[in-house]
Structure formats: C-alpha cells, structure tokens
Length: 272
Image (cartoon, rainbow, N blue to C red; front, side, top):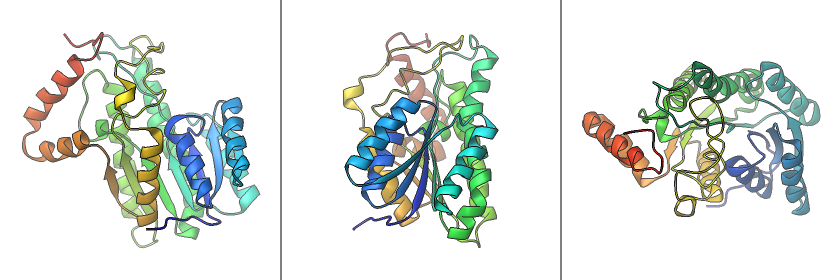
C-alpha cells in the first residue's frame, strides 16, 4: 500500500533525535511539510538539512513541551507559515529508572510535565486546526501505559495519563472526524535510556539494555506513519507488548511477576 502525505502539514515534538527524527524524515519523504520541535536547535538544524537535501520542506521551532507558552508559540509559528495543521505527533518524552521509595518527587513531576502536560498543551492549541482539517493526533506511548513497570513509576503514570487524555479527546471528537492514535513501541534504539532520570533527577548516562537487539527508530516510525495513514486507534509494536496487553486482561498478577523478573535482570537494577 502506497502511503503518501502530499502537502499535509505535520508537527513532530521531540524531533531532534530517535523516533522523532525518524518520523520527521519519513513524513517529509512522503510529501508532508514537517514542523520540527525540540529544545536542541543544533540537532533540529541537522534534521532540517537532511530533509532539505532530499527535496523535502521543514520548519524548525525551539520548544520545551513542558512550557505552555512554548507549545502555544509552536502552533502559532506553524499556522503563520502554513495556515493549517493536519497531523500532530506528541513524541517528546523522558524516562526514569529508580524505585519510588528512593525517588525525589520532583522527578515524578518532571516526567508528568514533559510526557503528559506536553501532550495536553500541544493538543489544546492544535485541536481547532485538526478539527478543521479532519486530521490526526498521535501520542507516542509505551507498554508502560498499559501496565505499571517497576522502577518506572513516573514514566508509567505519565503514559497512563496520556492514554486517558487522548482516549477522551477521541470520544469528544467522535463526530468531528478527528483521528486519535496511541502508539506503543517496544524497546527502541534511542537516547531515551541514556537521558533517563535516576532517583535524584540526574541522567543515568548509560543504557541498561542491549541497544543493538531493539527495534530501530526507523522501524518504529514506519509503523506509526502507516497507522496514521490507516487511521488506527492504537498500535502495540512488539511481541512482548502484545503479549502483555493480552495477559493483563486475564492474568494480571502473573504479568506483575513477569515484569518484575524482567526488570530485575537489568544491569544495576534497583530491584532486589
């Protein structure tokens, strides 16, 4: 099936690296005008240059999604340039790894500010334009939004909140032809684990997993873009994720143990 987004305008948050970068490049290759949002302007310029070298079109906007004013400015700059919005992909996010016993509350708040409130702010200011274009809103989530992951309290909480928010947006816009997708990649090669927060809010600086055995950002981007094109409600990408969603319906206590064992095997795991 040919997937194209000719002349569609797509906003991607967290576009400077990882899944966001891959989404931006592939959407541009498929004809979309992409608006790249992140805090790192140098990295955004690198993505923009890559897209333009391939004949695509990109606008960059410096944006910290945890700041309401930045999100409003992002949407305003997009509309000023293109006078429409067809796709919003809420991809910006941060992770964590620490037991709740040891975690400073400020870490949980930061996770919520970026992962949940960033989605709320961007969706709020984008929604009138998405309603007008009968467009699409996507939240890049995780299996942590379907079942609580040990040592990821703030991450799971923020993804659960994202799910509830976006599902409600879907229902409220049921008769306005607004498409809402919740996308849950498996563990993906990206810098999200390198920058994951520890108990005191510092970055852990190294991945506790073998990055080479994970999905690539490009693989994840392709799946998400096809799901947007097909206007799917949700997509769970990994076998582990699909199995977990199934098991949660019937044997949730077993799933608790399965996740505990898996996370306890990570190098330097905070689980004993």
